[in-house]
Length: 339
Ligand code: TRP
Ligand code: SF4
Image: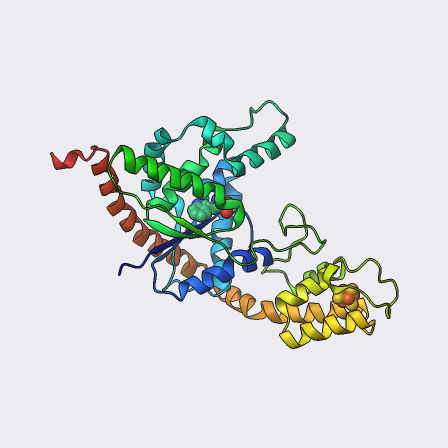
């Protein structure tokens, strides 16, 4: 039986934080151990839809993000890392697909809708900040997936409307032209969203509540010391409720089963002070990040190896996209070489 192709993408706009690790990275690590082809796109073109005025930032983060992904243990022999802009077939497909989706459908896409609302809040209500490229990025994302015959797409739940949009484009293409494309399925991680240290629902760069995989010991110390605990606990020996404490929440992510149990019991019994509890979390967090940062250091010292991984991966990905493009053009009757 043919193995289904896994495809996912990330916008290179910053370093990875623990939210990315638990929300997506762990899923990738599991998937790379299965035998399916696995393409991982560094979506520089998509990042530029939002950040076209900041090319240096995107450029820098293509490398940063790839290093972070390698640091968490993704193996370039098992995962094909590629850069979106290196695959012109994606741009070509985007143009073809743009006929198959209406402007109003894009405006109704819940993910796009939320992003447009955020932009209007930032830049005023005129809608003038919404570019053609931005509105169309779900179309380009459909091209990202289908250019490689992606059938399994590991993503966070915020991406589900984009997947649905892709599936609609696929169905439309297959019904107008000829059965050519496959409908991709999302797979979600158990924990798609990690709370921030401040207790807010999502860890995020803009929220300033995130722990990055590259954070050093003193940064971690500062961040953990500022984390939100049970506000009812005033004195060191007050009993408290760990379930509303962010320190406990993070113990559960990075500590051992035995220690987690201990934190919980002692917190409830009032035999554990918050300062000490935070110190233990800092130690556990550093321990957790150690192997990641060791691998990261290796790639920091060998940027040429990272570039080579991206170049080789992009070549391999392009081969696949070229094959797929032949089928698409044939279905659309624009395969002139044939005549
Ligand atoms: N839109 C995704 C994000 O913001 C990134 C992405 C680009 C992607 N192309 C993709 C995700 C293809 C899955 C499949 O995180
Ligand atoms: Fe949170 Fe630990 Fe304080 Fe309990 S003892 S409230 S788990 S920091």
